[in-house]
Image (cartoon, rainbow, N blue to C red; front, side, top):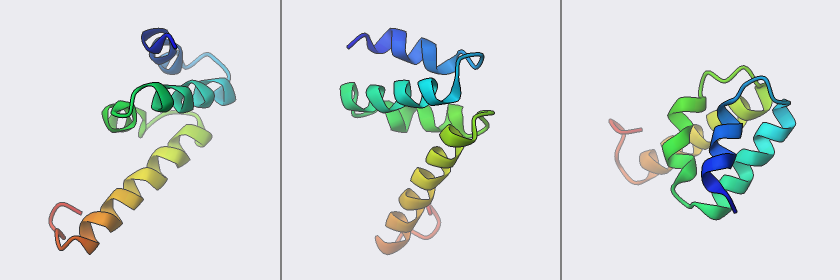
Length: 74
């Protein structure tokens, strides 16, 4: 998979939101660290689909940190 091209496509906001979300999902399958690296950049994305996915992941991370006894990091 051309990870660099997928990432470029993802950040070109004029593309259709569903296509950009698919690019994000494909990036995750190719690069396990992609979601961690890209989440901060996508939090203010104009696509509700992408932004909702990012917020859900951040909430899951926060809950995991809370359960791990790290409330300050959560």
